[in-house]
Amino acid sequence: MKKVEDYVKNIPDFPEKGIIFRDVTSLVQDKDGLKLAVDEIIKKLDGVDFDLVAGPESRGFIFGIPVAYALNKGFVMVRKKGKLPRETIESEYDLEYGKAVIEIHKDSIKPGQKVVIIDDLMATGGTVEAIIRMIEELGGKVVRIVALIELKDLDGRKKIAGYDFEPVVTYEGK
Image 1 (cartoon, rainbow, N blue to C red):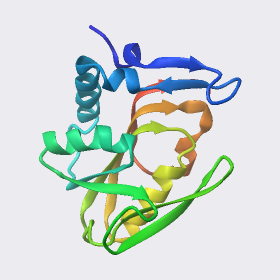
Image 2: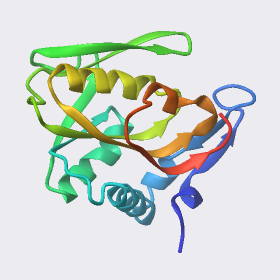
Image 3: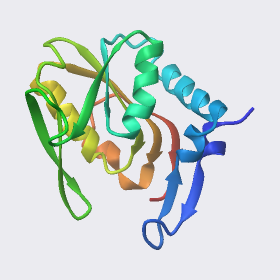
């Protein structure tokens, strides 16, 4: 039986020399790979009491929405600034060269709701840290964070210390 990492393609020297890019497009284009990935994320949520799934565009949507559907939960879209039509709150985070801003609808999370964050990749942790700030600003509680892939050497766990984080697959290196 195949594992998630059997579907992930390793692309050396992308986007720059010395980096191994973990490409999930081969996983999501294969029906068995996609099903396996979603099922493995769902396993990481076994026994977790939560109300909503939150995921950043675009790959957090790919994995978060089918999980929310399968577990009969709502889905909170986390989008780049200016992409959501109603009143939003925003959070800024650092990129390798610069900053980025993400937003969620102000009415997407109600005080006391328990939220799971799902994304494809945990690298430096900046995106997840920004999502946590918004969830908590709205009175929600992050009860688990699940990433399909963790790039361990980028130390994303440091930014989310104190939160329950479960990767499906962990890779050493960047």
